[in-house]
Length: 166
Image 1 (tube, rainbow, N blue to C red):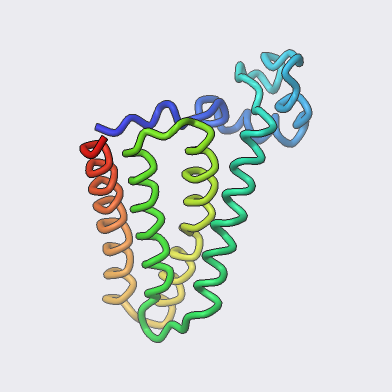
Image 2: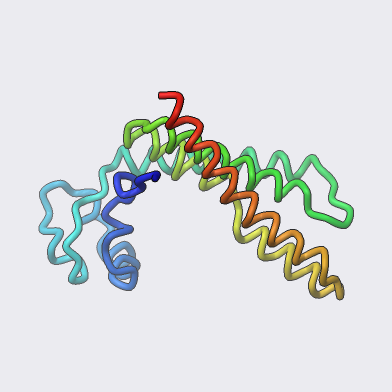
């Protein structure tokens, strides 16, 4: 079984409602190693390291840039193939990264950043809504099922394959 606990930073472990409040009202405390972080909106979280933040940001920018290039240079007729392929590629890539058991810094940049920026749930949601709005039923349902089923399947297959090869 793939263990994801080492990937989850302090932001994921704390209460979501407190996190947004803390990031908006006192972001300097998140990047300060010496601040009293127990006073950040009632959260007891460790500080977000500046370089980890940059790793995720750089990876995310590259991933989003790749997604933009692909979507900008492809045409979609009836079925949104480019988004489906991007999301499936991202799931497979994340499976490889997790399966290889890479260090946290690499996973932050390539997993959270690159794969997170490359894949897009919001575009999937938008495209499904547009297809439903156009009185389509079968196509958006197939798109959703294919995205979820094949995304999870690719993630599991690539992560297990990489775990076995180590």
